[in-house]
Image 1 (cartoon, rainbow, N blue to C red):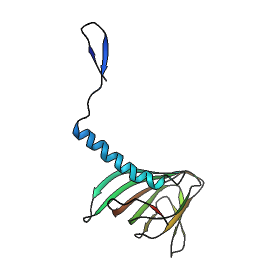
Image 2 (image 1 turned 135 degrees about the vertical axis):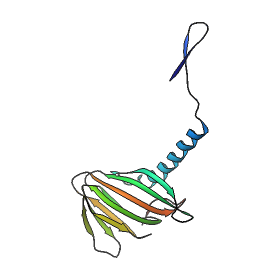
Image 3 (image 1 turned 45 degrees about the vertical axis):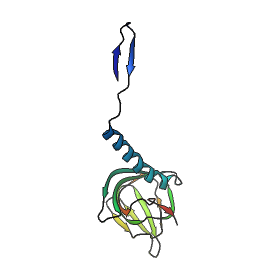
Image 4 (image 1 turned 180 degrees about the vertical axis):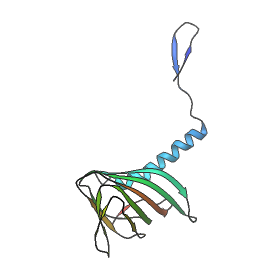
Length: 147
């Protein structure tokens, strides 16, 4: 924070103005957070943290790289994504149920992929679970929708 001294000897604070570039960066982060939080707002114990957003791989799509954290015993209800979800378990364990497939138990060091618009759900174990997820999804659509 900057201070300036008035001529009468009283010190006052001034607040630096946001530059256009800083404002744009804040707006992009807020928008990314909105897309992520809208999907998890109905799932207690789930946090999606946007690490990087990239346009593409083709027009109309974007790639979202996220850290996904689950509290112990979190149940994620059936939902879909408007694109492919690829994940890697960093810590903990999770049971993934994808429609049309046998449920699979995944532990740290294992990976998975969920096809576009395929309903799926999950349940974590007794410890905190963390995933590194990459979503390649249609731009402008919610990251997740109930199924």
